[in-house]
Every structure is written in C-alpha cells, then in structure tokens.
Amino acid sequence: VIAVCHRGQDGDSLLLVELLARHSLLPVREAEERQPATPGVVHLAPSGYHLMLEADGRFMLSTDPRVRFVRPSVDVLFQTAADVHREGLLAAVLTGANDDGADGLVAVRRRGGYALVQDPEEAEAPQMPQAALKRAGADAVIRLAGIALTINERCP
Image 1 (cartoon, rainbow, N blue to C red):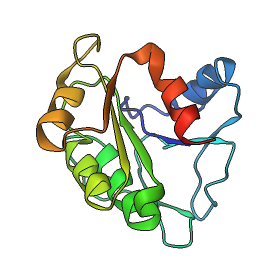
Image 2 (cartoon, rainbow, N blue to C red; image 1 turned 180 degrees about the horizontal axis):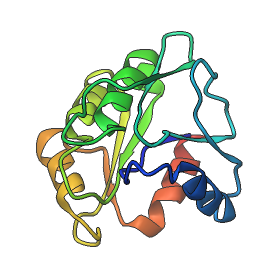
Image 3 (cartoon, rainbow, N blue to C red; image 1 turned 90 degrees about the horizontal axis):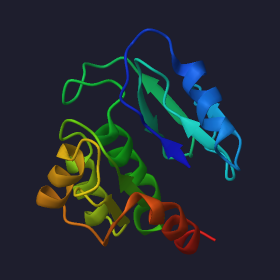
C-alpha cells in the first residue's frame, strides 16, 4: 500500500504517519529512498518529495518541480507504479481540491490496472475524483466507507 497525501511542506510527515498508524491495522511508515515497497505495510510519500516506484520495486524520491502545483504528486506515483505493476495495480483517487491523480489514473487503466474513485458526491473536496472520472473513468466509483472493503476483496 502506497499513499500520497497533499499537505504543507512544514515537515509534518511523521505526525501524519503517527495519525494514520492509530487508525490502520497495517504498520505505517514514511517511504525512504531505495527502500523496497513491502507487502503488508502502508508506505506514505514524504512531504516535499515526489514518490516513484522503480522497476525493481524500490522507491525513488525526487524534488523535481511540482506537478499540478503539488509535491508529492499522485500522478507521478501512479504513472511509475503502472509501469511496474501493470494489471496487478489497484489505484484509488480520493477527495482533493485539484486534478492531481487524473492523468496517473489514465496511465493505470491503459496498462490494465484497476481504477477506484471515491464518489464525488460525498467527497469533502470533489475536484480530484471528478477530474479522475472525467479524464480516466473508473472500474468502480465507491463511497468512502466501502473503499477499504473493495481493496481487501481485490487484493487478498
């Protein structure tokens, strides 16, 4: 599990890791350069870095320019993860106030991955799920309460 969250650049990554860990059955860790993506662990993109997945399944961090005004960018992660995992990838776009993730979801679907989008009707900020649906479509549009169940069913 690899997650990207748009947030400020003030070094709050470890606070977010701790918050997520309190609500997750899986351990939550901040992704590190050259670390392998480990099954059974939630890896969180560090604040201020694009998180990419290399062909060998290891993470690469980048301070390349912002994409869609953000760093880390969901598009960057999805595009690299789609190249590595192709039809074995499940990508989810949740609430957010820009269109980051939409182009990455196009890449996921083109490579045979499964696209899951939060129902924009219930999203706190519907712009990201709306943009994802408009640009990429989805294999499933699901309310937030059903997303974890769907992921667990598809990724036993």
